[in-house]
Length: 230
Ligand SMILES: Nc1ncnc2c1ncn2[C@@H]1O[C@H](COP(=O)(O)OP(=O)(O)OP(=O)(O)O)[C@@H](O)[C@H]1O
Ligand SMILES: [Mg+2]
View 1 (cartoon, rainbow, N blue to C red):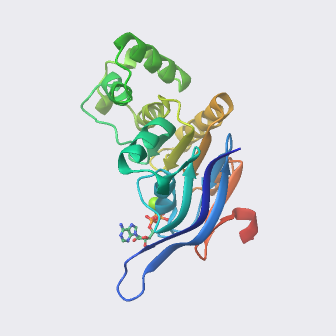
View 2 (view 1 turned 45 degrees about the vertical axis):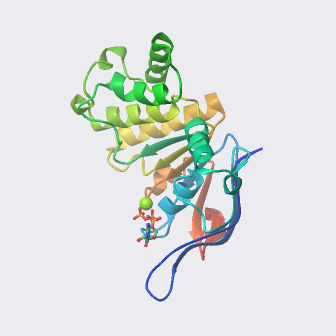
């Protein structure tokens, strides 16, 4: 079973006379229930790749299938729907609203996902924070009062809260110390076990990358497994 299938995907950016080619007929299948890391030098196209998978960037050609939906066959409204339903994002800078409480930050995506019953939302939020080791007494605290590691765990909660099939994390441990880095990776490994979701994580840290089941990188516009580059 595959959660994400790329078939002959091309993507380039305009760049003066010669376009900057990121993907050149790249094909790859991301298996359901596997943890992938994406590595490679700065500017290689890692963020572009995960943005295409996450439906926030469009491929120029080729097919991208996310949870059985071919993104070239659906309209913008359906793409937004697929993103909401199937994909969870975690970014390096957390992208939480600092002056809002932890509860508000977690409640907003649930509200937009159509969960109108507030006690149901609260139950989902409590389950999510429990799963990442954040105590319930932090719920009313503004995000600005949390540590970097706590913020990142809340950002992961927000990504997980709708039980997405694909979790995309772009350098999720970039701002954290080693202890918190380990905690975050452990959370990803636990989530993968519990939810059987696919995790695709960009990282510069090879020690972290090696914890994933499979490490991929980009080479000549193709997606290749890291062992193949050796
Ligand atoms: N919207 C855009 N328009 C033009 N060029 C872009 C655009 N987005 C990215 N690029 C270029 O594409 C290349 C790949 O960018 P990308 O952000 O995917 O790299 P990355 O591997 O994530 O790098 P980093 O490790 O620094 O985050 C870079 O050279 C970047 O300048
Ligand atoms: Mg990047």
